[in-house]
Image 1 (cartoon, rainbow, N blue to C red):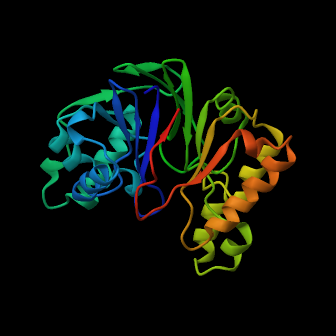
Image 2: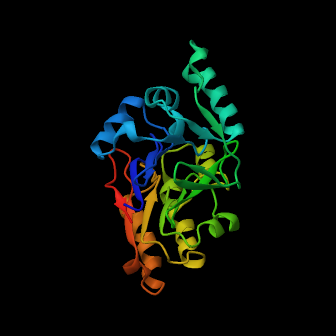
Image 3: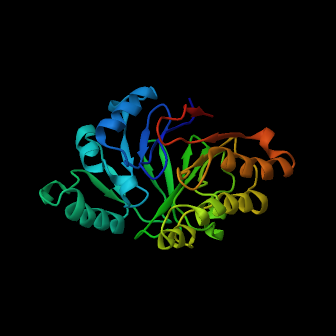
Length: 272
């Protein structure tokens, strides 16, 4: 096995995925409860005893809800930026463990800096800054035995830095959060709609389609559309928006396999 991506959950109710090779398995985000994470690992055929580390993109609840309990259960290190750690600790003490603040701790913590490459086991990790309303949000490119996998969700805009980081990727997980018209006409308060549509909110189907049309180099063997809104998107809309552009660009869709990451169950493992 060279590289395997298994998305356990993706969306506003919780995010969690596994990036792995034969010797190292990284759990990216811990937005499900510990119990639910272990359940979905089992459903996906992943052994929790083989998890090497937990890597956190940012401190929002749907990415860290199960972090403290899961890290203690698995007895693995947690990797996050220093600013994200401080924000997680403040939130955890104020909200999650307000009656037991001593539980808002991580026994094994490793800090990293955006823009500075590091390694977890045999997997190289290149973190990069993304545009989102968190203190220090990151996307990642994982390099595994020469295979590059881009991983980026929760970004309000596709900046030049992000587009450049995603070049020459062999696999790509990327946000396709909302359909703009569904969001505008949907049930959210206007303040929330403004936040989602802002430069520090979430990437729309249309914005992702522009990336595919203008900046995507077409090299990925697979693309996973992630963090689809259950209220402001439909899987068929996200898929059609991406497919329409990929088909016009020298029929790139035939060179890529397009997947949609669900919220309520694991996505079948993808291997290169």
